[in-house]
Image (cartoon, rainbow, N blue to C red; front, side, top):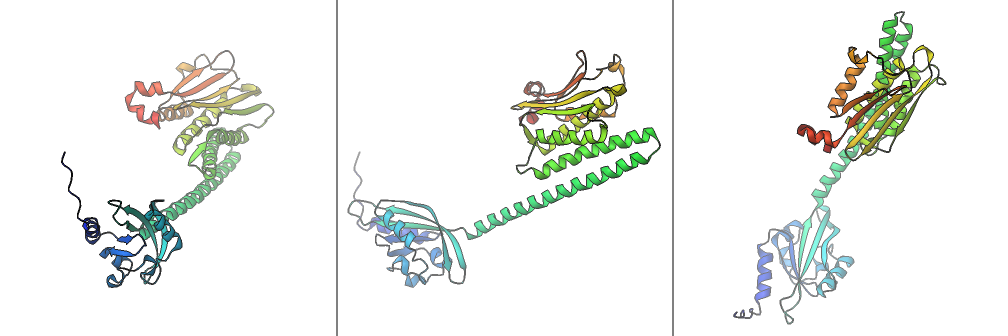
Length: 355
């Protein structure tokens, strides 16, 4: 292979000057002593520098001395000596009539041969506006988060007020049927209020299920259990957390199943315990509500589903989960199960299973 002819002695400088001269970005070409050899028109225009008074001047002398930055000078000298490299060095520069500008500087050491003089090519990027936009977005996001948290507090407070009004109406009515419906409404409103409180204290955008279920069951117990020494509700949940939408559905399922157990599992003043359980492994999770009451009636399969059952079935379907009911000996165990296998069997559910 034929050897390339030697480059003309002025070739490297001519090439560098051509790059600087044709650039639309702010560029500076410096010698090893940091004296300006060439400056792009964009550099002079951006930083309000007289193009006729920049060539052959040291970097620290151009303009009104705003480029005389000791740290920048040390880095450039080290780069010229081959001891360092400037890659995305950030600095603030006070520009006449423009104020403080935020700059990102890159410097490349240009050496064609051992005998060729060392030169530095500086690329300067003004990121002031971009950083200001980023700061504005961050400020807006923080403001949005504060407003959302305030809204959650207000919603939770409003729900508690509504629940209190419903409960007062239930106590005043003389109709047992009306009282029953109002009590059910009160408990359901309180379950949503408990979720709102959990959302208001959540910092990561997710709801920790164990404390949420505990608070939810305390609210239900306070409304429906008149003798805590006779009936109790316990939560056995792992450290799982989920997003707000799923937690709403899980909370409503727990509310309906616990209400159903309190109504039907302990007739005639029986004592007992209701246990709410939750565990997850990857995308698979199981929510359970079990009691040690009288168990399912023999004709339960032929009975017409009530409102609570319909709500649980609809919510389970929304979560792409299946319901399993067992009555082994004493008590009843209701499980709501979400598994990856179920999602694979139904391709339309695969996206939800990944969530």
